[in-house]
View 1 (tube, rainbow, N blue to C red):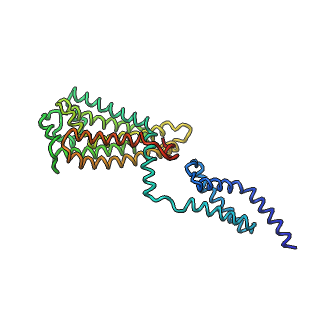
View 2 (cartoon, rainbow, N blue to C red):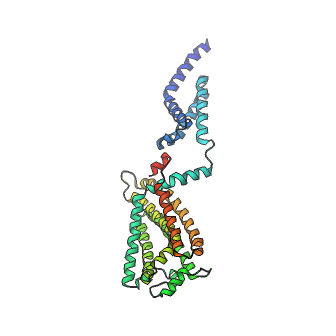
View 3 (cartoon, rainbow, N blue to C red):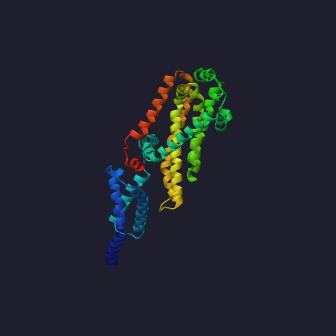
Length: 343
C-alpha cells in the first residue's frame, strides 16, 4: 500500500521538477546539438557565456534528482546531458599551435581592419609631425638639435658634408660603426614609442597623439639633413629595410591607443571603465601584432641593412615588406564569425 502511495507522489514531483527546470535543459541541449553538428560558429557571444551557466544549472538539477530519488529516466537524461556539456566545455580542445594559427590567419587581420579609421588618423598625425619638423629644420637648422636626441645624431646633422653622409649610408657596417649604433638607438626609440603610444592611450589618447607627433618630427628632421644634400633617396632606402615595418607598427600602436582613449573619453551609454575594457580587447589583439612586427623589424635592421648595400635593393626589400603587411592586414578575407565581429 505504501509503495502505491509513494509512486504517484514521485510522478507529480518529477513533473513539476521538469516544468520548473526543463527550459534550461532544453536550451543547453539545443546549444550542444548545434556545436556537435559542426555549427559552433553560429553561436553568439551570449550563447557562449550562457553555456557554462546552463551546465552548472543542469548539474544542480542532477544532484537534486539523485537526492530526492526522482524517476530513473530523468536522472539518466540529466547524466547524459551533463556529460555532453562537460566534454564540450572541459574536454580536449584544439592544440595551442592551431589556435595560434587561427589568431594569425583571421583574428589579428580582422582586429587591424576594425581600426582603419584610427590607423588613418595615426598616419596623418605622423606625417604632419614629419612635415612640420622638416620645414622647421630647413628654415632654421638649430631646430634639429632640439628635435633629435644627441645620442642619435652621431655627426649626421645639418653641418655634415655630403661625403660624410654618403659614406655613412653606403659604408659596410662594422660592429662599432656609428651608423649601426644610430640604427640600434632608432629601433629602441621606435619600439618604446609604439608601446607607450598604446599603454598611455587610456589618458584620453593625448599622450598617444604627442608621441606620434614626436616620432614624425624625428623622421622629418633627419630627412631635412639628407634631402638638401641630394641624399633623400639613399636615406629613405637605407631606412626602409626595417623602417616600413617599424613605422607601420608604431602607427598601429597609436591607433590601438586612440581606440582606448576615445572609448574612455566618450563611453556612450556604457560606464567609462566598461567602455575602455571593451575597446581594449580588439586593441590588445592589434598590439600582439605590433610586438611581432617590431621583432621582425629588429631582424631586418640587424641583418638586411647590414648585408645589403645597394639603395635599390634596400628599397625593394622595404617596399616588399610594406606590401606584405598591407595585403595581410587589409586584403585577406576573414574566415570566422569571431574575426568578422572584430572588423
